[in-house]
Image (cartoon, rainbow, N blue to C red; front, side):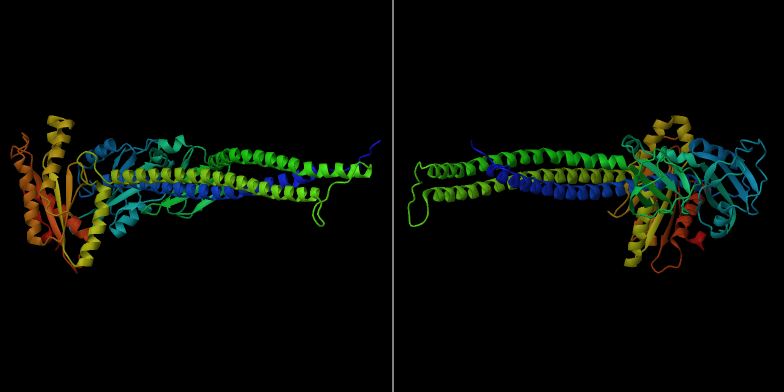
Length: 561
């Protein structure tokens, strides 16, 4: 009776290490590729988060500047002008985000308001003292426009609000009061776009003191809460920020007036994309495992056969059935066959490694293709952002630069002219009796009139670096770099003449056609006059043209002196 000792067969002893080695190699390759893919994914996601934060900050800035510019349109009137009630009512109707508007004199007493009574108490607002409020003190002291942080209201209720204020200057340029508008903090929900909502991304706006102005639904913070953030920082795995208890990734960007805008990405969004990357790797890895197992099994079987045959021959010799034939000086034929079998085995092992390397290369190629897809999508997102940035600086009706584009161009042209020691001319234009034109012919005709006037003004520009911007309803400003005073006057006169030459009928005008009034000023090289005074001077010259009978051009130099 044949007795077999306990233990492993030669086939299993060979197959097991080979399979383990193959599996370890595949596992290491998958781990390395997954770590690299995760780093690339997080890097791409960080860039996308920062772009989203910057774009959101630009939208918040545009919302604030838009309403601040609206308030500046009425800031050229005296504080004791009895037409303030009508102006405030018109502003509130045209800009529904304004919750309240007031005009306060130099002592801080409210002299005009809309509404004139508080919402909760139904008490009169006129006569209340606001001299302790920053929105009154700061513009009165500096003569500059002011944007407050978030605070609790007082005269019109206690809800969180943000205040915009502009100083009212007398003829000497001295502040004699302020006009202020309040916007409820929850009005900033208008900036929270649908694309962010659909992707599950949340939105947080904070003032310059890191107090919350607006937080979208799903964030634990509310208005007036505080949260410390740093501009440009991508903060991973923030806990306690979401109402559902999830961790979140946040990216923050700062506006040009010091507010922070933060986009909040739940960690589940990022984790879901990383899990999809891992799943995409498991297919090639599983195939590689099957290949390794099959190759190891085949090699073990081919190796054990000659050894088993040699063992049978040795048993036959023991039983007296004959010895294996030995050829050569000292090497039996069986051992030579075994040696050749080992050589064949080595060759097959090399083939197996080559197949494993091919599988790893296929895995790397798949990951590289995904990297290309991510890069392409990132480029598409950047292109969309560039288009949005261009659209945000262009007036949709006339094709001119809007107020934001005007502000950007003004800064860059001022810097260029200062560096080149060249003058910068500013021409302010306003369509005469445009409201009556709109009332008579309707808004579609008014829009067409604006488009024709804008085209006529643009046709007078002689340099590729000249800028024409629509800064108000019917108000345009031209920036003419490198233009001296005599040429600036001729340019303003060309604009006036070009509009009148359109011969657009206007029965309510003393000239019978649509005309413009213009004021102009020039900032000379090495001049001590601030750029803001030149802008104010051209506006003042424009209104002097109105007072002198319209359809004329006035220089701002005498007004500035």
